[in-house]
Amino acid sequence: MSQSSPSRRLDLPNVAGTEALAARVAELSRPGDAILLEGPLGAGKSTFARAFLRAASGDPSLEVPSPTYTLVQSYETRLGWVHHYDLWRVDNPSALIELGWDDARTSILLVEWPERLGQLRPQSALTIRLAHGEQESRQAELLGWPGRIAQIGMQKTP
Amino acid sequence: MTKPKIEPGDEVSGPILGIETSCDETAAAVLDANGLVLAEALLSQVGDHAPYGGVVPEIAARAHLAHLPSLVSGVMRQAGVAYAELAGVAATAGPGLIGGLIVGTGLAKGIALAHNLPYVAVNHLEAHALTARLPGLSAEPVQFPYLLLLVSGGHCQCVLVQAVARYRSLGGTLDDAVGEAFDKVGKLLGLPWPGGPALERLAASGNPERYPFPRPLLGRPGCNFSFSGLKTAVAQEVARHPPGSLSARAAADMAASFQRAVAEVLADRVAHAIEMAEGVRLVVAAGGVAANAAIRHELFAALHVRGLKLFAPPPRLCTDNALMVAWAGHERLRLGLSSALDFEPRPRWPLTSL
Image 1 (tube, rainbow over the protein chains, first blue to last red):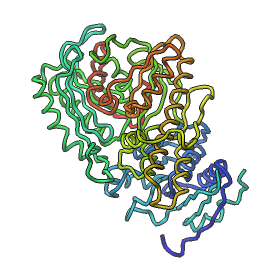
Image 2: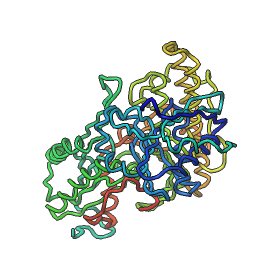
Image 3: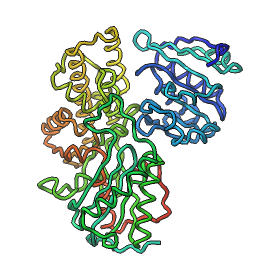
Image 4: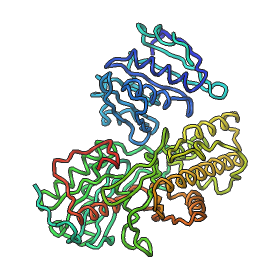
């Protein structure tokens, strides 16, 4: 991540706030984008990914199973293909090549535990760092997307 | 294309070879014409005695490719069966990691083609669902219909098993699978991968009543599951302790309290599922979490008071293996259900779309 990457912070008062952020990011996404979700267990990465995929597909009840074991799940959405990676189990970035990483780069990538990417981390990615707040609240720190970051988080979260 | 050697309603005419490569395990097995085990072999990165804290998952198709051919020829030799004597070849064709699926189905189709044998593309979930019917596992053969509680790292669902190839989904997880919650809580408590078995051992010395963790969806209508909130509650409890200061006592109590919460939720959800599956008197538990003794005990107790039976295959058959794939092949071939050789592996393949 270059030092000049723009960043902003958002307070997410509850789960609905995380979901609204995800829906907004989905609206702004296009093929070739990578959205990297960082944060400890329980910070809301999977909640974000589920809401993103539901917004992208226009299906509010879309089943989004965790890809922790399958490592990647792919969805055909209104935005084109979205590949949802969970790299929690992956220790070696070279394994990603066998998970179709190179081909997937032309689509939208949604990546949990992107710390495992190493050298493969896309420079142009939007990184979202989620952190626990009090009870249901979370903080989100967004980095990247120089042209679009200002358009995120303008809406009031419920 | 293959000519099915078996007509509907017939018994299977010979042994069946089964191949499993959908996730981390590379496995092969041979069952005889009656479904009795002739040979089996399984290679897993996730050994009980894994000497390293973090086990590298064997996600590379390359690894399956390196091991599978010798594993298959090994079980065939051990079984004393020639390829031409087989009644069919079965391989997991989904759901799972596409690379591994391609390796396993590719080899199976090659053998089927070379020896003019029926090929069966097996759904991994159906293989778990039918394992309980493997001959010799229980005193009375398990008959349809029954309720399947499939609880593993990748799956968490209640399914009404009406017949081979006939399944009705009653409910599933809204977020994490239960085995995933075990593994992630295990990691929070500093346990080695896979967290499930290690957590069960730690929980054995803990107080399950010390931490009042939430019971997500307990008592709610339907039989969906949710484990994300429970995982988060444990994470927040762990976070109260400065890094490195979690005592062995507290860790064991957290493990036991978490396991109790899971067991109570599973028992409650299954009780609801049974009400949705009219007339069903038997619950079959399968998947890696069904190997957990505390969970089995809680399920048994919850079903017993309702006059229902619980059957769970032995732990080694609850986790991924090739015997279940060979058996699913047996069940399908007996009904004349073989697959075309151009059947493509499916990374996502719900039981309800067979």
